[in-house]
Image (cartoon, rainbow, N blue to C red; front, side, top):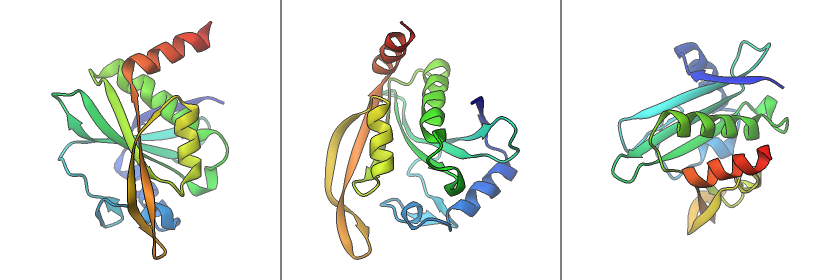
Length: 168
């Protein structure tokens, strides 16, 4: 399966924006949401749209935000079109975006946060070699219940050494 990434165009963002009304889990976050989009705490956001060859619409997005130039780290968030979930697009998208970001920036660490109930995201991050760094206890409200949030990260050296092992 051939896939590619590019910076998201306004058209891509309109398509992606329509996904937010599809799933409750994407709407529920500890970050504020305005007009269907997460409001970042810093001004800089790099939004990548992800495509499968032969499809004109994006199948996923990978946002990078909260850049910390001193520590060379940034947070990321992902979303896959609900109609394209379970097909391996998320795993390939995250891997391709990590390759891209570690090759084109001086970032040392990428980290993301997800609710304990989002087992698809937890499993994806573990399969890709992310480490669970923290548990934010009862940090995420969903349907009147409070759930833990997990913070996962991967370092540049971990990602690059993992890729070397896979090539052998």
